[in-house]
Length: 311
Image (cartoon, rainbow, N blue to C red; front, side, top):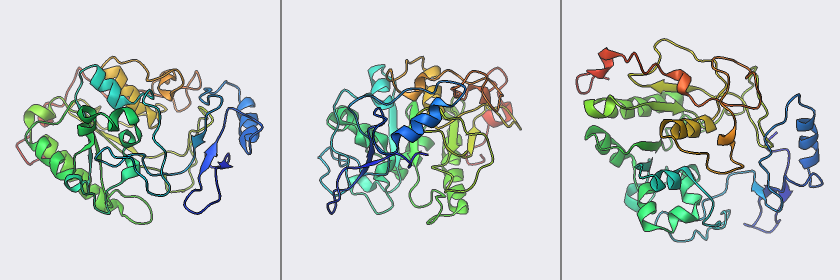
């Protein structure tokens, strides 16, 4: 469904892109999707704003890591500085955060660095502000060092390189090794580990069939299920949670944990919190905030006192 609605911006070499003016039902493909959404027994979120185009496929970020405008082909132009991000919101509330990308290589990215994976690199307000831009200038070596020394910021995003388990070029075994090394680094610092929750999730389903319930929450989704694991001394033990979550649930968790407001009036973190433990939310559309994955009153004392290197 996400690829069904598009308009072609240009057919010139190195200029093409798939966009949707999804607030206008007369645009190609939009009417069919809006017709489907109108047939649902509930009202999905209206996130498309008039006169704006929404990109539907992967395009390079508008900025290079040094803050210079990215002039390479297939690049999203720099956007208005007023568009909010979770990074900007955290900084505004004096909450530390960083993005660590494998392959960063001290500002000289290798081929394994995923520029399209860092949402902050698309943000004009972050990439044109040196004090904010420094939060995205970190690699895997920086993460391992900061974790072992107990110096990770309050909110940390870590992206693997070509060992991310993505169908087509990686393997799950490679991703498991990457994940185990990262978790062990955090657990090697007792002070850090005792206040940490690690969410491990996947980029996408790889196009594989999913028999599970998919809740249309807006013009853009949802889609098939992907795994999410939580690793924390406060995680519910031996538990599988059936609350309806999606990737925006991670954003909702950050906002709930630090008592932040939704980023904007049209962002999907405004969706109500889904019914705890319900495969299909009672009041749709709704997504969870991941708090149902924890039992903060009963931490796992055994993991709170792990010897260094034995996570």
